[in-house]
Length: 386
Image 1 (cartoon, one colour):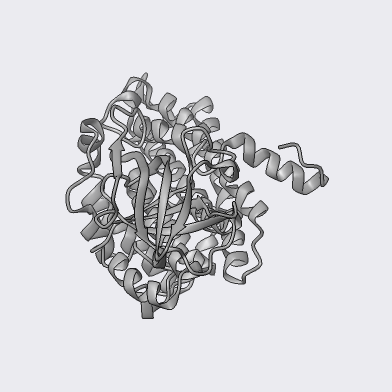
Image 2: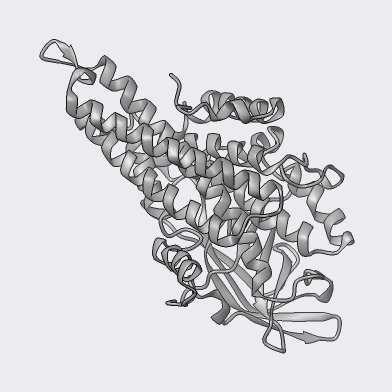
């Protein structure tokens, strides 16, 4: 089954193909056979962190001297695509660790901080989380209430962060808070070495059920002043991390779309109705044709975005467009795939309903669909409507 309709893979290097193929093989062998059960039970597959570390899913784009692989952004995107074929929760664990935690330390940390934390994050010895959103501030994080004050060689943090992936399992958290002058800086919080700090998990979610999402709560919590990310100076630094995360979502969404399309195509060729496979029906062929067309558009969008990323020329508005477009595209394809499967589409024998539910989170994850529309609108008109 060839889902690369425009032969984009001819542009990939051997290393990029190897990363894609090896990630897909791992997902097929270790994720797909077990993920439905863990999703239903609302639990993270055991051993996941170690296995992701072993396939290089932590710090793929980080230099080798810090434990990474120093791969390019197209390779990173292809890995995110293949991980999300398995489940959004699998891709999210990898993306949080790489895009939001390791990238933040690599880009805005001191050399001492890089050497202390990045190798342990790369091997999975440390698991990280990223604290930016708050209970009342998601799309407007610059209005955050979390702040810290300095007391000698210590800082004291107050506030809370909400909808945080890995919240209760993280060894370290990158927390964004306002300093005494009102500017936002990043903090490296070691969850075992901080006072007056609690985490809670959000239970009974209908989406992202195979990963833990929760809250970080600070109440006169004390850490060393050395834990401030040395080079972080404003909320724009947090946004730079989010750009990598949104790039990962753009690729991961295509992974979902591919999985749903390929499932629907295979089913339509096998399912007999009135003595013929339903793939012989015009309406089914129209659905499948629309699916592969939209997937192909998104693949071209992702590849060119990856080229821009690798050349240091990608603008955040372009990343925003890709994230918004590809999630919406995947939503439509998942819906059509479910209809092709009929009643079987809602069962756990097939992955489509699980992907549909996860997409309901991705549409607002790391920026709502509406915010991304307005980012594009501002870019093309020069008028800020946010």
